Image (cartoon, rainbow, N blue to C red):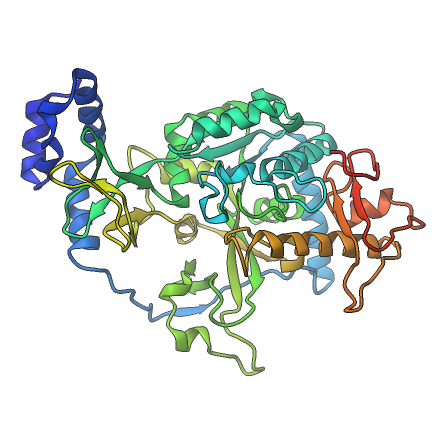
Length: 482
């Protein structure tokens, strides 16, 4: 148990002694828990964050030297690139066959914004079989593992809120066909919630109010959980990173992996052409010679809307949180007890208790949340690769209950992608009056996880009728069974 006298002295030195205001009301277990929670905080460093992010709100500074980042095209534009891409696919497949690739998903969120009670990864996200997000990713990983002849380990970053639920969900579903030994859950770190007056908040009389430390928190969490050591023992050198809310992501992409490796990159990313200048995607740029991402909220509007001589957006490449990271790079950034990524400020409404112990549920932001963003690691990498991908192939996140980036829009995009794959394979599709596919279609990754793979397996004479629900399962069965 941490020493109460030492803790009290440290709290008084930084004006946070109110955290012990209910000390005498706690039982021994409650006192020990509170002291341990406080003892894990670097109070001196936290005070610096309070002065920087709470006492005064940081103002984004637009760099003087900022140019658009170099982005490799989705399809090779010349013979030299064709050769590079072919070698990259071969190299990616070699790394997979050697067991050097791991999948890693950020899955600490709950489905609250979707009106769903549970980890977001357990949300049903597909149009016919109604598969949860975790199953979509597990089947992709299994399909890639079968092709490679080697298991691909899967690392899942959970949170304090959903760790137990996530593990139970995976167990109940037998890890969706993956070997449990190759699935590892680890918890995201947290940061104390800071009131707008600079005081740390209490969730209960013996518990600090905390918030997840952002998706960039995956780097120290990989270290602290022993997951980096586990990767090292398995021989993993390449980490394929993605986020849980995007069921259309290609979890394992040999081309992307190979381009990263052939270029000796430490961190790579996929990019989309932005729908409009103000789309809420980070902007890939080169700042002072380093590939970087400027968050959409920090990008000056005149710069975001600027165009080149051809009339196209200068900063058209948007970040979609799909990355390849070298394990050695993550180890370098997390050496010692710190992490090299900066914190960002966000104001949130945080439930807490006041000085009298009364529970407060604010309707307006009352606290500052500090979080790290994974894209801030890019300028720290010696070399980077950015590869363009198509929105219709790989990006349709489920973020909102309705409207843009909702379950409805994602289901539509999944059906459209499946229909495009079938059409490319020569299958005739029923259309409605607006020219849209008049059937619900879902293709299991265990049957085909790309248009090329589908073309090898599908019978072009397959008949699809209007209003049909078509599911192509692991053996190509048609029906609703998983």
